[in-house]
Structures are given as structure tokens and as C-alpha cells.
Image (cartoon, rainbow, N blue to C red; front, side, top):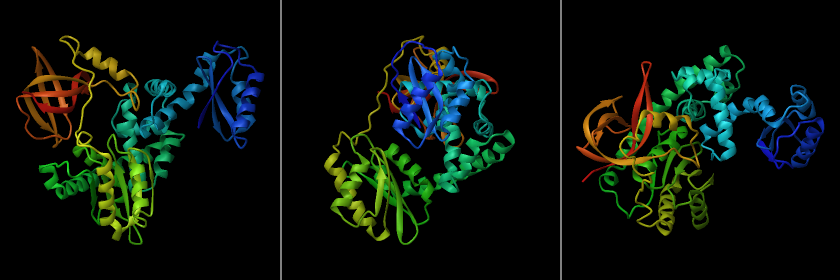
Length: 427
């Protein structure tokens, strides 16, 4: 873990053996069982990475630092070494990106783009056919991350860990290839489960009702490792807290839930467990995601109790999806340079990338990949290429769209492309 130590001075100071001794003393006070293996310095703040190693590791680090090294120099020596793995962990795990974390993510990106990625990270980029020299913060969250996570969902998470810790390209390549295969299998399982879930919700999908506040689904043949993804897809599609179950051993079901703003999922499960003892065997999670286990026979009782808890806390307004945007861009502002500049920044939990909205005329569209729509949009004489993922139905002639400007890279060329996040017919 990374521990922040308050340092006496904000000015750049000489790092001496006395400084390291002082930090080590504070380390022992924080956790006597661990030493520190690195010192990170930024803007006068001193950080340390707390791991096994103790004084020998600290002395080895000190020997690599010239006696008069200042904070910024120390940062460049050791900061980059942990930044890449911190970048991987934070972006794959959707950890809140505060100022410190954004600094580490930016350093990790810089290292990857410079061709100095760890073998496991480089191998994940390679199997995903992504150019590491153009790495962006979303690549690990949406390209490498799903491949690593697929191992834990369908096989053994150790495969992903071994890939990230691989010391050579020869060691990492077959592990990354296996992760890529598992991810393709995960996609197939997910698509089948989602299709079946939507079939079970056909009536609700045709006429969503404010009288139904939650979604609770189960099929005996569903895969335990994919229920969370399906719950997330259903929550996004219907704007309802969703829990999806799969059959486990010994007559139990294991479920994964996702929630919407205004409904704390973990607290709701706690309420159900107290009101209906014996319904939930165990559970855990946080406001927006949770997991639980219950006897298969208790599913109807859980479904009723969960719905009752949601009715107490959710209003009709809570059940209406809202899309917050950063407004419109005036003519001439929506350019390739803007998209490129935004893409180079570090965005994530706590600091999402900007979303803009406007009314466009749809001048042409086609289906790509079987379930996505590529289109040409026009606004005030300006034309833009755009893509809408997960939608293959015809669009009206005019739409109001919330979108993110992005860079589309194809066959060695780059161009502006808008990713449509949400849309409505325009009056």
C-alpha cells in the first residue's frame, strides 16, 4: 500500500541518511511488521511504499540516490517504477482518482508510452492490438482490465497476477494469450446471459413501470463469474437496482448486484437480512455494488424484501435516469485538437471526462460489428463521424445527443469521432 507522510517542509530538500532513518521510524510506528522499499517525493510531500523488505531495501534505494539529490530527482528515480503498476491497479479497479493518484497514473502512462512497460502490461497491449506508444488511461480499464478480470471470472485469477508480475516477454506472452482467450469466452457467456435476462424482462422492457423498483433474476445455468457484469448492464439499461444470481453448491445461490444513485446497496442488503432472518447467508459490498449468498429456496422471499426496501428509499424521480453534461460547444470548438487534448488527460472515478450535448441531424448510418451504429452527424454546417455502441436500431432524422469527443485510429490515420453516450429524438 502507499502511505502518505506529512513532511515538515514543502520546499525541495536534500535527501540524507538521517531523512531515511526518520521515515523508517515513522514506518515502524505505522506498521511494525513492515519496512519500506521506496520513497516517493512530490511537491514537498514524502510518500513510502510499505512492503516486505525493511532496512536493507531502503539502504539499496539510498545507494542509488546521489547525496545531494533533491525531491524531484528522487521522484524520477523511484516514482516511475511503482507508477505503472499503480496505474494498472487504479484504472482496472476504478479507484477514485484524487490528485495524488492522477499523478501516479500520468507517470505510468508516460512510462508505457516510452516503451518501458513491464512485460505483462506490454503483452496485454499486444494481444489487444493496442499501440502502447499511444496508451491512454481508458486502455487498462477497458482493454487490459477485462482480460485480467476474465481469469478470475472463468478460471483462476492467478493467471492474471502471474501475467502482471512476469519478468520477461517470453513469460508474459502465453499468459496474456490465455487471458485474451478467456476474455473472448467471457464475452460469449455474457452475451448469452444478457439475452436471456432481457427475455425474462420482456414485459418490463416494453413498458417500464415506476411500481417496480428493482430487478432480481436467476437461471440455473448462469455462470457465477459473469452475474456482476450482467447486473451492471441491466442497471444501466433500465435504471433500476439489479441483482443477478447463479447456482452455487449445496443448494445455495450466489448473486451480484449493482445500484443507482440514491439507493445504498450494501445498506439495503443489511436491512433485508435484519427484517427477514435466514434469507441472506452472507453479503458484503458498498453503495453501488455488492455480493451475496442465499439458500435457493429463499429467493422469492429475498426478491419481495429487496423490492420493499427499495420502495421505501426510491422516489419516481430516482427511477428516472438523468444525464449530466458540460453543455454545448459553439461552432468551431468541436475539433480534432480538442479531442486529442482531452484524450491525453487522466480521467476516471471522481474526475470523469467531459460530456457535451447538442442537437444533430443524422445524415447517414450503418451497422458495424453486428450491434453498433456508425453515423454521420451534422450541426450548423459542420459534419462529424460518430459511433453509438450497443445500438443497432434505426435512428430518427434528428437527435439530441450527449457525447464525448474522441480520436479514432484506423489504418495509421487519426480522426475526430464522437462517442454517443445517450440520445433522444429531437423535436
